[in-house]
Image (cartoon, rainbow, N blue to C red; front, side, top):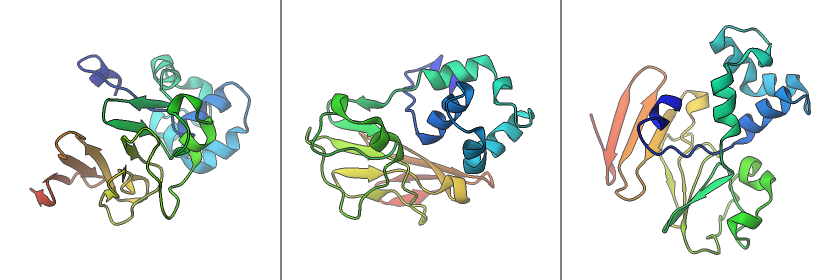
Length: 174
C-alpha cells in the first residue's frame, strides 16, 4: 500500500486492528488483546516476535496516516459502520471502526452510497443493499480479499491460495 501510494491516490482507513496496534505502541492498551485478534500473526509476518516496537517506522507512519473516513461526491467510505443520522465529521470513532452492520442498515443522511467492511460476508460476495455495500468478503477466515471500483462496479478478488477473480456486473471472469 505504501508503494502504491507513491503512484496514485491511496486513502487508507483506520480500522479496529490499526487502532489496536497504535494503542499498543502508545502503551494505552493491553498488547495481549491485539495479539489475540490477529496481532500475533501480523508480528509473525515481520519476524519480530511479540515486540510491537520493532515494526518498521514507515509502516507505523502509514498506519498513523490512516483516515477515519473518506467522502466523495457519491460515496462515503468507512471501515465498519456509521450513525446514519450524523454527518461523517460528527461521527463517534467507535462506530466507524468497531460497529458491525445491523440487520437492516439505514442509508447515511448524506444520501451517498456507503462502502463499508468489518462485517464478514462469508459467501465471498459483496453485500449490496443499494445504499450500503460491504466489501469484507472474509479474507481473514480464508475467503477473498476484495477491491471494488465504485464508479464502474468492477470487482477484483484474490484469496490465500493465489487464485484471482474478476467480475463485471454480476458474473466472474477467469
